[in-house]
Length: 360
Image 1 (cartoon, rainbow, N blue to C red):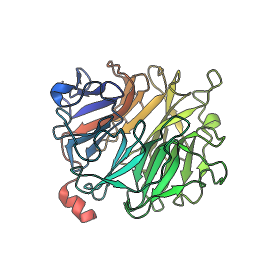
Image 2: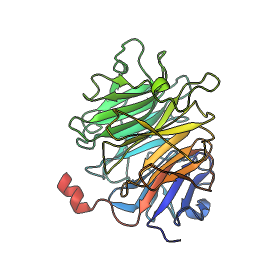
Image 3: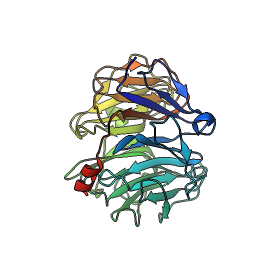
Image 4: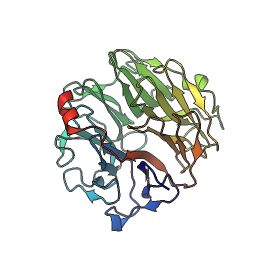
């Protein structure tokens, strides 16, 4: 079967699965492909200038592929042997990249200025221990209109913000939920829509006595609004007294007003759901899946080239695909282990070097 791209699925403990024929056949990448066996993959991300170049954050550091994930090379720089949980690429200057590390290694922020060839540590305060053991930097989001502004989330140690391109990071301890004494500290994910002003979304597992929730700020984090997902996202309901548990978020690159979130009843959970907003979070609708998830939906991904292609995956390996922007879905036959990241790679560049230079 012909396809206009390649799908990569990152898993915790099973490395990466790859398909180039719309999921008819799959290959699990391993040592013959340059990736260590049973890699604990946390994130997959492509260079927006060239979809052949892919980065993979995992328990050994950062892998780089130049052939859409067929083969990989492990970075031997300072990020080696750090457990990398998230990677972000500057949408204005893709040579600038950030990577967040954490459990079992200490929470650390790294920056590259040469498209991942070399890396440096950036100063960022973070606790060495927390309720789950060692904190991890689970989210990095760069303002698409102002790449000097960078948000980072730590599970479990709260929000960080940089306004100088990652030179320094400020600890945001009392802004969510505008509560100096009982702040939210369990940050799962962050997304930013194009402004002005930008809308910042933060998915939280709770903390400070607050329930897991989706938070929104339209004034660069000065104040925040909670969506109260337990009551307003009712498709899951409580199972054994558990609360809704948000984990994945994605903004449609072709329409910044369209946002998807994925969640479950808890972690790993018994079921999950996916919601879509077409008005920058003012209203949300549940999207029907053909097979009920077997656990929390851990991640959601929208194609950078074709917004009709949307993917979501569950903690226990169910993989779903939509070819019409989330209106209808199919469950792919390939079932995986714990899905952490899904990446669709197209067969043409997404951002030319000339375009990048004009934007900068």
